[in-house]
Length: 110
Image 1 (cartoon, helix red, strand yellow):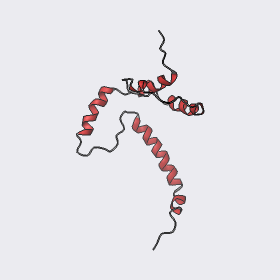
Image 2 (cartoon, rainbow, N blue to C red):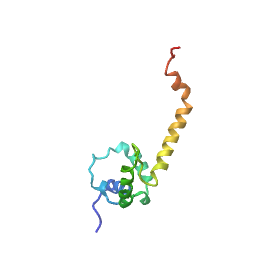
Image 3 (cartoon, rainbow, N blue to C red):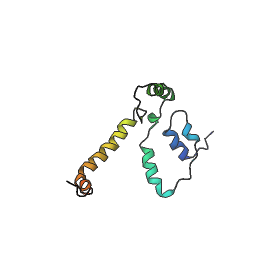
Image 4 (cartoon, one colour):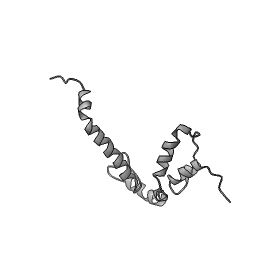
């Protein structure tokens, strides 16, 4: 029997933990003008992107019990490379525009 789940739900499922938690969350109806962005983002995820809840459950106590736990933690083997790529792009852009950024500070008192 074919599921009645919408394509939107299937997209959420592909990006969620293997528990399917996000499959059950509700959101506002999609706005058509954003479909290309939503589709491009969905295309960047694969079945391998789904995390193993048991592995995450094992990682949490390690973070909680750490002497100096991180303020934020990226969980999953694919997360850090993606975030790092995004930040590398931002840092490159900021470096290229450094002169404009510095000029926006205005004149510094001596």
